[in-house]
Image (cartoon, one colour):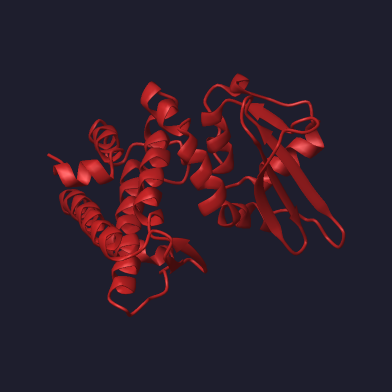
Length: 256
């Protein structure tokens, strides 16, 4: 059973837990390189790292974020040990997030993966990870779509995680001097998301709808696209941009 204080801070934890428990650890996922066990290892590392960085800041001794090698110790655990460790790290993150909310102004800037984020980011980012990686397990079920279409998911993906999300895809584009890729992701009734890359920089921003969209979709699909995912039903997105422009934008949106 998930403690109430954890459920209140991470309401997406319970649906994620149920999705993991409904599958074998060695089952495949929509994240093609990962099994269910790999997803759980990644989530354990996320929870631990978010708590570690925020707690160090609270203690007055800030630390740098560790890379994905932080997951290595969890790979040596048995399935039962990993499960217990994951739940423990989520509870620990909840405790640290509550302490930070009490002791720090919400706009306090904290270093995270080479940039600064504010205090609410830490719990919110774990919530986003739980939603996204639950989708990796379940695909487009009703729970996943409803969570992905929440406006805060789009906001967090663009404002808090956007530039890092473009790093891998930008590196895969052969732009050369003067080369540039730009795309508009549109969901009717909302601002567009404009992504761009050239040889030196990557950018992502909200903008008023203007001109043709590169890709038009529902809100949940747009979040999946930002994270380098694709809905099971490709008719949920539409494009008249042409193969070359569409391929370039989808390469930029390769995600992590």
